[in-house]
Amino acid sequence: MAGLNLSALRGIQPHEYLVRFLFGGSATVLAGLIARHYGPGIGGLFLAFPAIFPASMTLIDSHQKKQQQRLGQQGSNRGRMAAAIDGAGAALGAVGLIAFALVLWRFLPAHNAFAVIAAGTALWMGVSYALWKLRQYRHALVRALR
Image 1 (cartoon, rainbow, N blue to C red):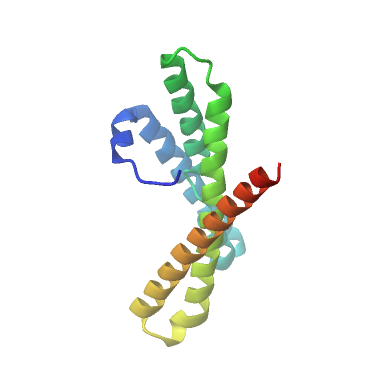
Image 2 (tube, rainbow, N blue to C red):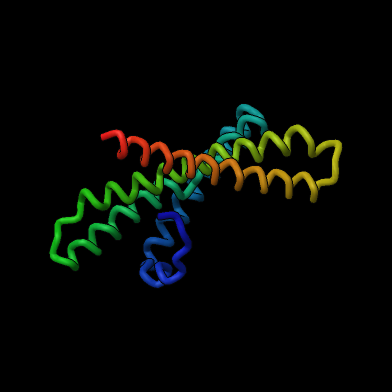
């Protein structure tokens, strides 16, 4: 279930923040090197890579395994499933970000920046939400047809 759980922040260890920082920094440096060689248009595409995504996947898997082990279960399957669900959400959010980028690319040069960014943000959230609901509907339909 998608949602916001601020209490989960208490369970994050300091080294996990370091891992996320290193992944994010590495992706940013790589995008800068690509931009230097191929130009800012291409480098910017790589900068859009969700830099902490790989770290998040491993941390989600690790947290789920630890949680299941505390309950006396093995938990590796649950960890992979939780990471996969988060990855699916990230992929759908990335499609929404493409919509955001297209709005900015098309309308920003000739229109009010605040209005264009607000419209792009609304479109990003709307597309991401609609795709998530479509995914839920598809899964419910598949379960009903079994």
